[in-house]
Image (cartoon, rainbow over the protein chains, first blue to last red):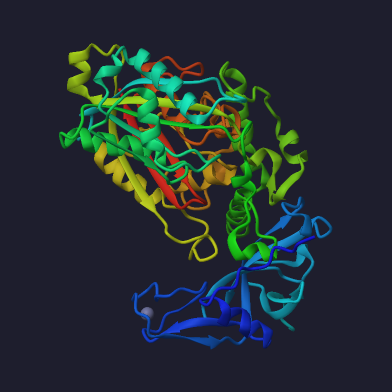
Length: 131
Length: 374
Ligand SMILES: [Zn+2]
């Protein structure tokens, strides 16, 4: 069964490359704005004077859902599974899975990056931060 | 521009399954019925605004439809905004008419995801499919969760919307789903994608609807029997995908409503009946708050004890909405708003002189408002 892996492009390669090093990265502009997903131009100032920066890996949960049916064969044996929005301590947000029992998830719950591989590809999952 | 343009006629196909019919054919049937309702000859039409179907992407869809209608428009286009595109088409028609660019516009929409492809509703969401992020419903589940966590409404608040819409659909002979539910049914139904239960989610439907738009003056000249004045309209667009949206518990309905209420010279207290876009029940709760019918977080109280049912303080989705009449997103709500002002609705609200219709597109990306009046 084919796992639905991301389509890596020259634009997004630094993001996935950082995960292979165990870090979460985002784009940071000279104007001070930081964002994900990868873009050619800064969505605040439209400039291109930006670079990739590694984040701390710390984040908090914004919202989440729990799938009880799978829309792809790769997830058939994984239901129920959660998908969450998390906000990095540095500001950018992303879609992820939080490795925690669903009934413990809360808005604002602190989580940390927990890189996991799927079919040899490093993904940005998160786990509850140690208290 | 308040009241200067009217909806002169409305038409729709049967709702439900329409196997073997393409969306152009469905649109043509709805347009023919709308012109018959307006008692306007096809030759008077000089504009076509059509929402693109979700079941299949087609290039130059507006041109294809105009060809099948045998119309060479002076003005018009195909609109890609999800459900909001229906009211947007009507707004653009009104503004084009006011600007002297056209006189008689057809605004229409057809779709056939039920017998055709419903792939768009289950689609992978880009690279995030690697995390299992699929489907339209899951985006609304994210919003439902954020709303529920912030305001702690009981599940019965969402259930009240489903129960009211399903009761209205059961009374509507044209509705696709004529099976009312109880609150116990709502609570016992399985998760689709948690926290969405089965009956939080709209239908998947084939069908088409159309309206004829023209100036009030032209309607008088043509002898249109039951024109319904357009009092106001407005729109708002959040560009943010929900991952990036700073606040998941409010919508663009706020900006759209402010524009439309100001244009119409009315406020929430003047609205006697509302057709609120109900792709998912949370959409109705958040929309009621954003229009000022109740404060933020107050929708749970507002919808309690049958207040949005027929006979309540603000009857909502009186023909069943997306949850019960047809999942075909958006234009059926405009048709029901017109019937309420005409006084010809199956579940007629007495004294309905101001009707609100709301459309929404994407995952609460675009909101469009239409206010109709007697
Ligand atoms: Zn910048």
